[in-house]
Length: 346
Image 1 (spheres, rainbow, N blue to C red):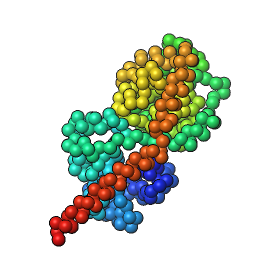
Image 2: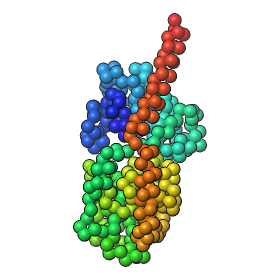
Image 3: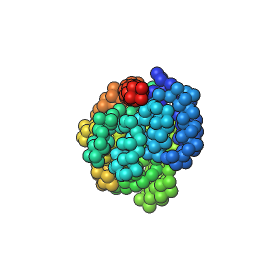
Image 4: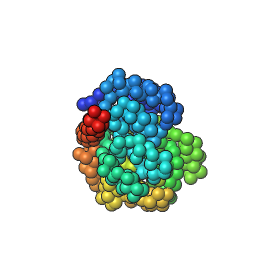
């Protein structure tokens, strides 16, 4: 996300561990092992890359990578800007990574900054809120060419990794409860994504009696046409920052149902552009789906309000500009410190 936002106006290079993460990114990149936080081979390769490419800032995302980047940054005398996209409590390991090894932290929601401050992050002035940017060109293309089903059906979708944190089981139970309230033979649930929980979730859909109305479509390189064809987007996560999938669904004129976790309430206003629920509250999911199904005028109003909420505030260009400003300030601070050290030595 940070790379693609910065790429149009700045030179960027990705160092990645897993092929599944870096393989599909069409930018300059190098695959490295990142075996441990202090993997000497990775630190050596990173240092060589910094020198060869003239890198000014390192932007890691995971604690193990933040430590490796922090070591590299100290060796090469460049700053490290850690990214944190989800609410995390600071245990000793994360505190060392984010406080000691990073020169700054960028988060995508004010709620994440608040949790860091509440947890006693010693230098809150180092925490910068930069909201995620959306690929509006791709989203506009999907709005023009949605993947409508034949015959048309009232559709609820969710796009996420099928891991426990994303709460797909809550969504399935909520969709089953909605079916018990509405009947709704024309309704379907489209789940986009893959992950270790998928076999369990497929079994749960069968046990709940909604397997015929539930499509597990797996990972999609471009899910936007399917999301644009949906009426409702539901995200039942236990923990989030400000998830891109939710913002994309709002841009694609979906009414949204989402858990009130992380920074979601910063964009979803309950009863106005969507519905907020508590984690694990599958009955609320079902009730809100029933409301949107039975009241199409309300659903259309929420869809349009959702689109207007994110249309101007979450563009990739704005994200890139804000990130660039944060990086430039870190570089200038690092250079001032370098000049001060040089004066002390002389």
